[in-house]
Amino acid sequence: MSQLGVVGAGTMGTGVSQLFAEAGLEVVLVDSQRRALDAGREQIRTSLQTAHLVRGGGAKPLDVDAVLGRIRFTTELKDLSGAEYVVENITEDWEAKRRLYPELDDVCPPDTVFGVNTSAIAISRIGSVTRRPEKVVGTHFMNPAHLKPTVEVIRGFRTSEDTLQRTGELLERAGRRHIVVNDAAGFVTNRVAMLTVNEAIFLVHEGVADVRSIDRLFKECFGHPMGPLATADLIGLDTVLYSLEVIYADLNDSKYRPCPLLRRMVEAGLHGRKTGRGFHTYESATREDKAHV
Ligand SMILES: NC(=O)c1ccc[n+]([C@@H]2O[C@H](COP(=O)([O-])OP(=O)(O)OC[C@H]3O[C@@H](n4cnc5c(N)ncnc54)[C@H](O)[C@@H]3O)[C@@H](O)[C@H]2O)c1
Image: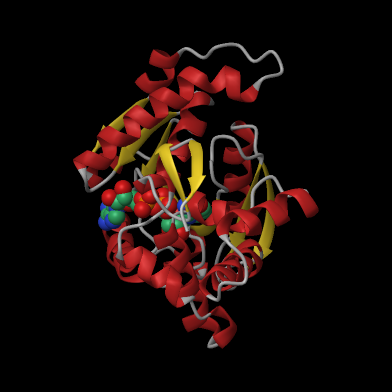
């Protein structure tokens, strides 16, 4: 593997780019918004500068310039013409993904694998809008992608064994484990996680408990590292809403109906950490400051 393409320089695309650039791969990171690329570069720089402190255990400081130097930031999709593997991380919006994949098909060599980093959209559905469904596979990275040890890999109906093998090899090269599951909206992780997060939002909506109490119960009683509302902020409330809508539409199951409070907060621009305010408020993308609701 000489070159990896990453599309989308938001929360996930920046983490995925950092992960593979740290592993020594040349990365081409594409976003339609120059602003997102500039913010992504700064986020990666900050993360690399503090990586040895966050990781602890005697981790050595990283060569920030060398890792950043392996990432090319561009707004041009055609710069992916040399990519052997592309990890797509654009907004969780079926229409946007449906438009992007035929363009990727035209730009990338026929053998390029498309790893889909979606929270909920079925992989076979994405494969169906490409000319290479056997080379389309779900690569569901957890957030933050450069720190989480395991990736949920989704086998679409037409994903080939060769594609799964190439995916496994790529992840191994970055020191990541993976677990393969079959295709369904939300896969395994988000079928469960989105229900939990949505139900926690309903508890706030109904006034059963405040934000801080709900998150404390999960941390202190269950030993979870984060409560469900802080998790929603980390994921991005817009991404949580879109994911619930995708699963709801796919399964026709009312248990996935998004809480009205979630919808209002997204409409009001409270998208969680990335906008500085969600259920909690944040001074930076990495620090939780205080509960807001
Ligand atoms: N946030 C999470 O915790 C998380 C975890 C796993 C998977 N995901 C999935 O990863 C994907 C990205 O999520 P995110 O949280 O990084 O979103 P985000 O909103 O932070 O970033 C999305 C980026 O995609 C860019 N974009 C949109 N359309 C584009 C196009 N056609 N071409 C190029 N760039 C385009 C936007 O400018 C933006 O910078 C989604 O499908 C999401 O469901 C998210």
